[in-house]
Length: 117
Image 1 (tube, helix red, strand yellow):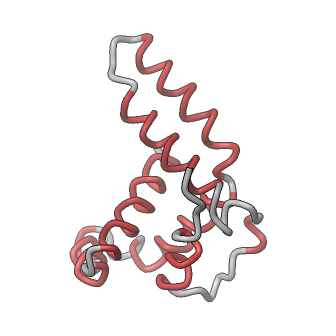
Image 2: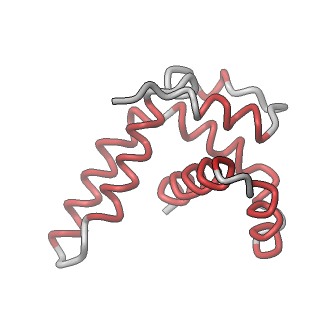
């Protein structure tokens, strides 16, 4: 659940930023999760440093979901988000490398550094 949530937040932040609505997205979600939203970008940054490990884990969860008759696509999508994160500057670092003082824009710049495949 935690890893899936971080992948969802990562995708949402990148999408909102690309469409110029990042601040509105953060303000809207902060109404529901006021304690979590201010550090979402740091949570995502740390998760991205562990993405290499999460990819296989998300594929396994997808297979587990499918084995009980549920759709595997949700966790295949989470695996894809983490696979992309492995190709960013964050994805090649470690959790200790994450600058805890980094702002949202700093983290997004690192997440946008993925090489296309």
